[in-house]
Image (cartoon, rainbow, N blue to C red; front, top):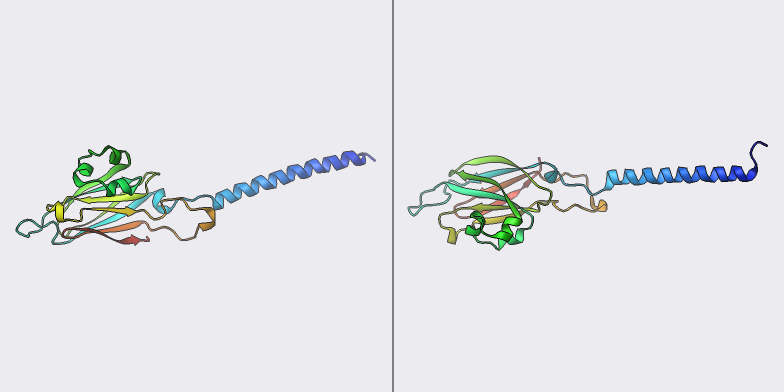
Length: 185
């Protein structure tokens, strides 16, 4: 015989070991591609926001509607936003809030106006903070923290085939802010 029995068995073991290693590597690679922590759709691109102002928004002393300044912040945590006052947020005087947020949009809405915008989120964003500069700030519901659905990566065993919502509707009423809902696009 050309090969002796011991050498043949040793060669087979080496070939099998290499084959098993290749199968294991390819299995692990394919699992990480299909089941790894996936980012939700809202984090991989822009979030679309529809801003709607009611016709009686921001009433003056004579009860006439007036334009409303709004600000949207990208938040790493909503806690500091919820615990800050209007002036420290808008004037950027709260150092902790400044470190945990980024202003991503600022505008003035006219009574009855509807506006569509897109905001590109950073990787560490978990919520959006919406601020409205109502004239009667002491009696207004002037801020709202809105959690971004799916902002935290899900483990592989909780991944579903449905896409995360990508559009948010925000309504500015006479003296308050409300979120209607996240809408799938």
